[in-house]
Amino acid sequence: MAQCSECKFYKPIDDTKGDCFGHEVPASTNVDNCPTKSFQPR
Image (cartoon, rainbow, N blue to C red; front, side):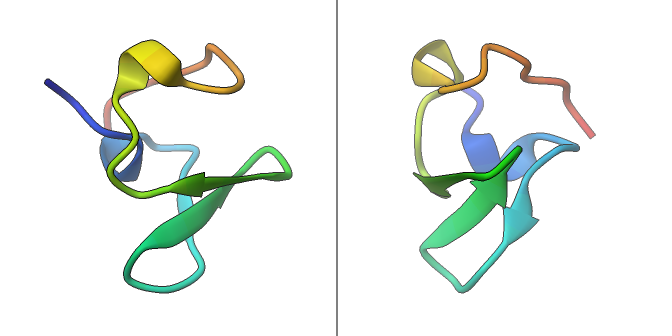
C-alpha cells in the first residue's frame, strides 16, 4: 500500500514526518488515511 511519503504534495520535515497542505503527517501514513484526501503519486 502507498504511503504519504510517496505523494507529490508531501514535503519532508525529517525522516519520520512531513507537511501536507499544512497538516503534519507521519511519513508512513497509509494513503487510505490521507488527512486531505488528495494523494497523488510522484
